[in-house]
Each structure stands twice: as C-alpha cells, then as structure tokens.
Length: 305
Image 1 (cartoon, rainbow, N blue to C red):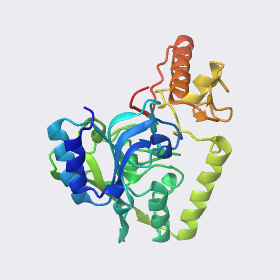
Image 2: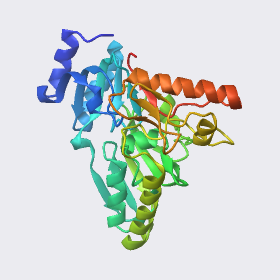
Image 3: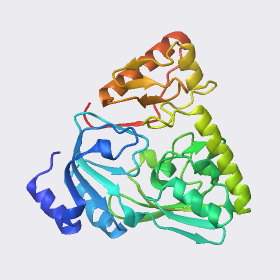
Image 4: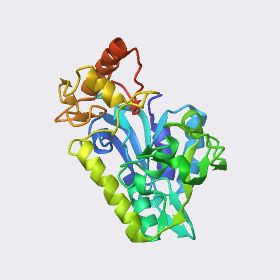
C-alpha cells in the first residue's frame, strides 16, 4: 500500500515534521551502505509515538518495518514502498539496577556492553563488537564466541499490533539459533532486562579486548557488510563450505565474498543490492551442488530488488 495524503497527515499529528523523512536513502541507515529510498521514514523518540502509530498502520493495512541500527539488513536498489519506523535517540536509554541492565530497544549492543562493564557486570562481553541494536539483537538472538542473548536476557517488554504491552520472560521468548518468538510474531521490542553477574571492570575489559582482537584478525571489518551473511548449517561451518567451493574472493560488481573470511559478503566499493543478492545466490547454488547443503542467509532482505 503506497502512502497517500491522508496517511501522511495522520502521521504528522503524531510525529513532528522534522522527524518525518521522505525519499530517504536507506544506504544511510544500513551497515552495508546499500539501499534505495524509503518512501517515508519516521524517527521515533518515545513509546507513546509507537503506541499511537502502529495500531493505526495495522488497521489501514499500511506496510512498515521497524529499524534499529540496520546491521543485519539488505534493502533493494528500488527502495521500500512503505514506512520505515526507526528508533531514535529517545529510545536508547540504559540504566543499571543491581545485577540487571535495563536497555531500550534503540540502544546499541556495544553501548550496553560498555555500560555493563562500567557497572562491574559480566556476561555481555561477547556483544561488545556486534554492531546491532538491543532490539534487533534480541529478535535474532544475536551471538558470537559462545555467547548469545539467550544467556543473559531476563525479560523483554514488547508491544503488539493493537498497542498492547506484554512482558515476555526468557522461556516465553523461545530463543533458538539466530531466532526468537518475535521473528514470527507481530511484536515490537521496546525494552530488555539483562541479568548478569558481578566481576571486576578489568577482567571484563580484558575479555572484551581478547574478543575484539579475534574479530579484527578473522573478520573483514574494513569493508561495509551485514556481518556474517549465512547461518551456520548444522554440522558444518558456512565459511569453510564456501571456501572449499572455490568462492574465496568471488565478486560481482562491488559485492565480494571476503578474502579474509568466506562467511562474509562485503561491499568493496559501490556495490548494489542486486550485486550482493547475486553473490549470495551463487554461493548458495555452488555449495548446494558440491556439498548438498543449503545455506540460509542470516540477513533480512527488504524492499524491491
């Protein structure tokens, strides 16, 4: 459903005009630095705005997408014909309460991990180098180096499509490998409570430094990407399968299978979304032909390609 004047007028009653962006290039809002224009983007600064906006959009059948840091997202070159709801700076509060960290969905995982360190709370070191937001990280059960959100999430405050607030505990979240109940339900993450354990700031920082060194030595952090492109297939490592399929450095346009880590497709310069999509599809086909393993993308495809 394309935007019309009445929809824009209604949104304008909720969101100040300076926080409504039209024909906004999505390349400015994704870590891939790729993507066509969003028909409309609204910057959310408080829960009340979501409460008034989302039920209305559901009621009229208007397509929308909740955006955090855009670190796991590929937007098509032809853009997105809907409303991007981006959680702004008013939705990134982080507070400490004894052994718990309360973080709003728009807070970055790296900022939250740093706040935990400063409070002498351990358990989130693995997330210090993940470029996503708290909301996005919880939805996909983000993880790295034997750590994942499932291990530290105590509860998640969400809102459903009708504007009802719910508190989901760890079990209700149904965390799995790069998934949670929210991936298949129309819930919007508002705030997360993390439960951690006390440790010295020096010990926490030492672990963070060690994990960051591993990232820098093994991952292509010098190029824009969406992080690990594929989920780990059971019993295999995606990067190894891709390498053994002869695809290290495979390139279409500005999109390339990283020379440094074959599990990453990177933007080596002016890549289009179509370039990235073609590389991903070629990787899937070749790995399937050789190993009879289907690689499932970890990234989200949004909009028109």
